Image (cartoon, rainbow, N blue to C red):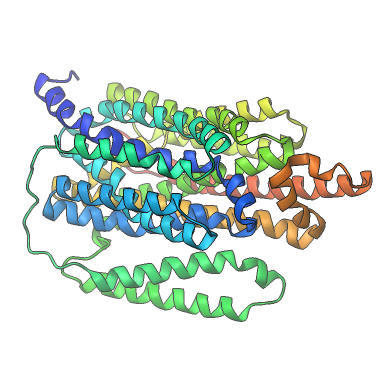
Length: 489
């Protein structure tokens, strides 16, 4: 099916204006990843460092359906400016942070802005081109993702090593100003104008549920050590919030979460697949810098280069998959096969990582990321087709919401597995972890050989469990991909 000049012209009219919002949304995860060991060394709270990633994802999860719903009603151009303004102000706050608490607050605010960038950009593409051509043009978006994913770890490593970790946040300011200028070119399409009442109560219950679950996950280590009363309170609060949320969403005239839409088989399976995929990818991007640091002594700049195969492979896999879908019309077979391969590779990594060299490990993760790159373009296309034109923004938001939620929960859960494995089975390794993050393997040089071997064994076991946890997410995603009802367009 050939692209008509009118379709190409319509897409190219908006594409330059959404390049930087997409770039900022994608690069934020990879550019920060290489700075995490330096942030840990600066603040000294390694076990709380996952909140630098998770807090952003929680806020983005909450923000995605808000932007999607408001974009449908008020117009996406207007909402794009709001998202960019919040994102830039929060980036400045992150760059000026003097404590892990202040940085976490900045990341929450940054997530409230960043959560809208990809949601609004995907919806803008969806309203501009036809479904079959949408798959073809996903290749253009994937190209931006490749560039941003590739730029992120290299730039993050370079900036951290030469200008400090604060620079990975401050670099957003000039990029954001340019994004503002480009967004002025977006066409002034009005929203639906339908009567709309913001679902503030739904947002409140949803925020309480997400926050309670993630804090509860972070405190699992205390449960294992016998401190469980606070966790029971959080569990009860999360359970109450989710019950009240579903009750509210069924009655609200303009619900935050479109439950009937999300209940469609193709959509809930796609959203669940996006959640598992997000958990896999963001957990790897978050904890691989620590693995390269403590196991191989990689610096921030070296870690950025080692992450390149992983981050570039995702974008490249997405780009190739988008072009093939556009030519053949086949969809779900690609993530089905890709995730099957990804699970097998993750299990291999879990057991073989201690015997692989640094470059071999990086190359294997590159192959893994190519397989994982088959997922998100197909998921986004499937949901947009099922949602239809009137609920395009809400549909795109459910994908971003699900991916962010899965990434937040997945990253927190993998962190629980990693740190609890050390704390419970090898306290010596847990005690040495912070020193290893700051000084690399040389921190063990003064210890007796037997003690070094015990610590390394504890670290190997902890990272093996973390990789197997990620493989577990992959296995669930693989099942969902094979069971997607929409397999061709």
